[in-house]
Image (cartoon, rainbow, N blue to C red; front, side, top):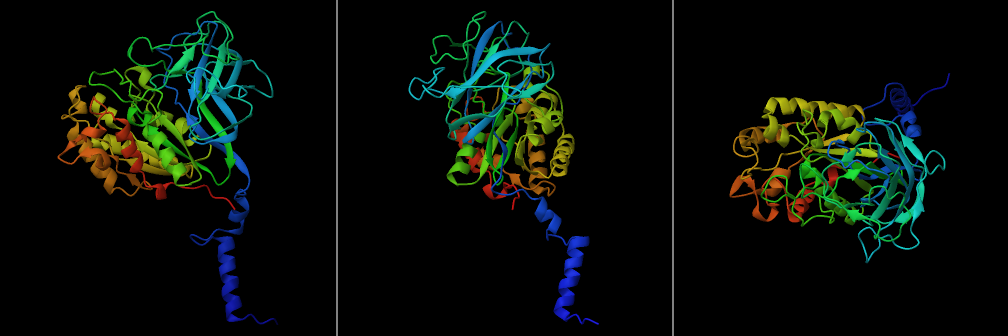
Length: 442
């Protein structure tokens, strides 16, 4: 009979336990074999514009849109997402292209030699997007760096009705005149003009129509950080009057997710960032004004957990629930718990951000002194809870030490709830990079 040494017995027992039941923290052989190779490649989100509505968009009429994309991770192969989620019927694109923005002419001009066709479903230039659906393009080979601006042009055939859009943006979108047809291959800007968003906020540039995302191919060790929230994530800088944007940040891409991407790049971390903020958005309820989008909880899976390569979500939302509908601390806590559970069910890390100061605003007083006790109570819970995978204390990073109910003056964008570029930089600096999860690979 074969004798088994004590050390051999221990190894046999540990091996059996590990194989059959799995020791905590010890990957099983199956777990190792299931991990993708770190040298392989997958898609990660490099740019995102969460669709909010189609209410105030200018209905296209046989014309071309040219849309800026500022990638938060560079690459050599990209694909694009177009949405007709809020449209009233099908929309047809007759043609689509992508090129690099001209480095000196800027605006709607494209650098020579960089224009590429965008195709669909294995090489088709034309695509029909049914009502309520989105489409992914074929991969496009185009080399670009992080923050190297691209221009995506789409020819909208006929008059399909209001366009699904990201309604409130800090960037210019250009369009050719109605009935002007296909200008997707124009290299110059002469056939395009920028249009202010009509209706609610006439000082805003036009929203971003149809285009909701760009993904890039990256090694499996690269992950996506999704920043999820409202205008403070979206990157709004407002003047003292409600609904009037400052021109300071237009086309400068200085929202806190942009500046977080700069930190990540400078630190040499293998991560991308996707901005899933919608201005005016609420966590618990659909917006009273449709341009502010469906509730954060109802869009959390689509706009956060479904982003390619997502490993971490930073959730900063709730101030509009307090300001618009007087949500209570307990109601917001219940909402945060739902988001945390949803993220963990998908194996995604989630960090909660504290709500930033609002006092001094001339918006409804719930945003200021009337809502302040609720904001403080919510932040106390966020800091104390252990359900999420960490906390980003945005409030502490940007509040005025002499009056914690207000922003520091140098961080105030002008209306008191929103931020200057320096304020958004301080927010990005508050994110603990060590809390951002990298994908597991072998």
